[in-house]
Image (tube, rainbow over all chains, first blue to last red; front, side, top):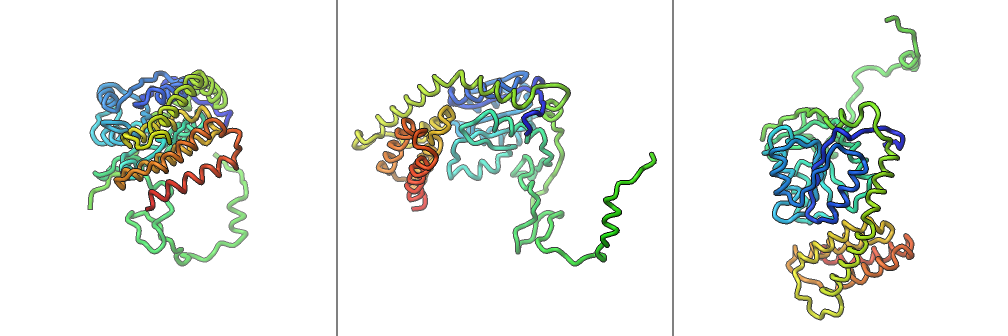
Amino acid sequence: MNSGTRFSLDKTSFLLVDDNPQALDILAQVVQGFGPKSITRCDSAVEAKELLGRQPFDILITDGQMPDMDGYELIHWLRHEAGEPNRFIPALIISGHVRMGQLFKARDCGASFTITKPITPKVVLERLFFIARDQRMFIDCGAYIGPDRRFKREGPPAGMEGRRSDDLGAEVGDAAAPNMSQEEIDAMMKPSKVNL
Amino acid sequence: MSLVRKFKVPNRLAQQMFGRGGKMVKDAIKASEASVAELREQGLAALDELLDGMMAAYGPDVPAPDADLEVLYIKSCAIIDLAGFTPDSGLAEASVSLCDLVDGCQEAGVTDWPSVRVHLDALMLLRRQGEKLGPTGREVVLEGLRKVSRRRTQG
């Protein structure tokens, strides 16, 4: 994110969810500074769920830990049961601490990214840029619906077989053809006129 | 084996964010920081109120705290929320350590008030002196807290 890059959020509607009113105020003030079209604030995931069912939003930012229904459950519901047009909107989790018992829930809920509290304007904006430039495919395998979590594409761990048809092995195979000569490589790099 | 479906979702945010015009990143961050600064005074007051309340409920003057660990966990999370108003105090990191400790206690079904009190004392110290301690001094305090939490979470 370059400090001179221009962007606009004046067509973007945010839904912000946090049960702690002070944390919600901070989040709303952070987003307000970016100049969004609208900010809708909710103090519970239950209320947010109801809103998501009847009103379109462009992005959801929710706290992870909340009573009754938490942020992870809200995003899980969004990905599995919410209707269009909100079902696949970017969903950010903001969390200060994740309980040991909730690690898998956090991993599997289908969130686009996680932000660690305490939040700062720079980090929140960086995450929005990540999302805007996100090229990941969505995955639906029944248990998990959300952005592909294996986006690094480094192949399976050494000694293990991959499960994807396009997984690359850890070992490099034998060359399929003789190495190119330096002249051939140079010729490929050499600028040349093109007649269009 | 379950059937896996891969599909592309149109990136609406990208279309909205990178059209013509708009504001520069540095100006947006400055505006956002100014917007958050409006909450600083009341945020710090709320932080002090939280710390005082925790000290009164679980501090050394309370021989056998009769309080729910869940409440302590929630209050500790609330400190992390507000710790952005004192970014160089170490309060956020100390609160994360307290959350780890309380979560570990809840998982194990035990209470460990001496370890909680060490954290509360450290939180008070960091609130008052955290910025003056400097990075090295803060790290000494925080590493001590992490050791206490790890002892609980790792048995």
